[in-house]
Structures are given as structure tokens and as C-alpha cells.
Length: 342
Image 1 (cartoon, rainbow, N blue to C red):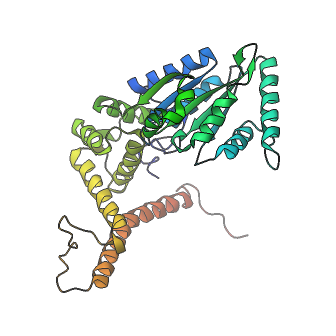
Image 2: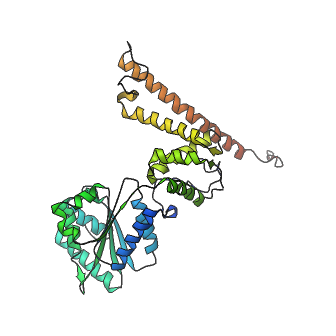
Image 3: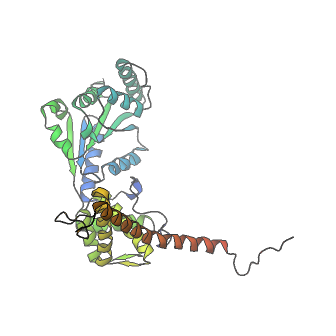
């Protein structure tokens, strides 16, 4: 919506991972180095952990983009509390193999045959498991057992395990001892620092044709960093909202005051979402207007009305702009008179 206003050719702060927007911070470059090192060895497990939204999935997408011209057959598995059998079926499905209605032994046979055929063609198999912290110990053991498929004493499959910080603790448990012995490298992906946060925002904007409008003051970048903590996904979410705010308010520059206004809007919305009935709670547990002598359901209704009014006030300028753009496109140029009725 704001892309045309700021003369951008695409949305700069989309949430879906896109290798076009890969930003090589110190941490992301190091994580990529570990992944590339693991690929060069062609065996074992590489473990990458990081906070939610730190950019682990974007790392994988960027890696897959690099692998397009290499002899690597790659598959990605997003685990969601899978048990051992479901994990095997999901691995088979990720590589496009038959997996429904057949036994575990048949699935293993299909996987081994597929991996052997890939090796004979000079290709390597790579399995990337996202959200690895959700795997059960038995599921992890099944993945470890897959590394026993070998050809000429070389593993036929390599695995990258991506997970949230708690996966590091899981790896230290007694159940994971055998897996730890096959981990050849691990790295924890931390947040961006203040300078990287600024560079990250500018990088994403330049990727979609940014020419300096809107501009950002130094204190605007600092406030964004303080609010988001340098987590890429949080930065994307916040900056997308900031750009929408700028479009609605017709701003061509953002300072700290503008950023703080969007911060307050978001905090207000979160407060409504996190409290029963949508009422905003203060530090002492009272409602926004004190609530003295007023029934709870009436307070909740009042808060809901206030929230709706705020939403409408935000939406009306959008509707007006859309209607204006539509009307401009529908009006013919001054030198083109409408055709007369025949």
C-alpha cells in the first residue's frame, strides 16, 4: 500500500523469508560459514540455534539458493512435535518419496534406495530440519540412524538442525549423547547490534529501490533498535507498521518522535489483546478510567468502542487514498474526450 507513495518496487519488510533480502551481519555470515563448512565435509550434523525471528530460516533459503547450481539434493522438514515414525514419513515426503500406507521398513528401504541412487549420480543429499527443539528424543534418534546409510564409508545424507535456544540445552541431555558425537559444528545466532539494525533496515529498503525517501534520523534508528532488540522479524514487523504510518500521515522523514508514536500505538493494541474483554490494565490492576462505580461489562464495552474508533481513524485515510487513486485512473486525460454515443 505504501510502496507507491515511497516509490518502492516491492514491500521491503515482508515477514516471509526471501533470499533476496539476506543481510550478512557478523552473526549471519558466521552461521553461513558453518553451513558451508558442513557442506564441504558432506557428513555429520550442523546445529544452528537462535531466537524466534533471528533469521535461521532465511539462512536456509539463502543456502538453498546457492545450492541450485551444485550437485546437492536438498529437502527441508519443519518439525512440530513429530514422533519417530512420523519423522521418517516426513523425511521421505520431503524428498518426494512414497510414505503413506506403508511400513517403517518400507520407508527406510525407499530412503536408502533414493540416497544410493543420488550418490551414483554424483549428488549429495541434504536434510534441513527446522524447529528442531520440537523433536522428541526418539525422533532425533531416527534422524541419527539415517546417517548410518553409507557408501564406501561415506554417509549418504547430511543433516542441518535449526532450533530455538532451548535446543542447546536439549542437546546436552543424556538422551542426546550419540547425536552430540556426530555434531561437527554448532553456532548460536544472536540479535543484530545497533549499527547492524540500521544497516539491515537500509539494506532491505535499497533492495526494493529506496532512494532516501522516507529518510530516517539517527535517533529514529536508535529507537527502533531499542524497541525491537535487534531481532530481524521484529524489525520487519515494526518497520512495516512505521511505513504504513508514514503513508497515512504523508511523512517523508521519520524521527524518534514518529517512531515512538508507532511504538505507543502497538503497545496500546497489545494491551487490548492481552487483557480480558479488551480492557487496558494499569500497573495497579485498575482499568484505564479507574472503574470506580462502573460495571465491568460497561467498562469493557467502552474500551471496545475506543479501540474501534482508533481502528476507524486509521482506516479512513487509507480508504480515501484508495478512492482518490481509483478516481484518478478512471478519469480520461484532458486531451481525450469521451467517445460520443453512436
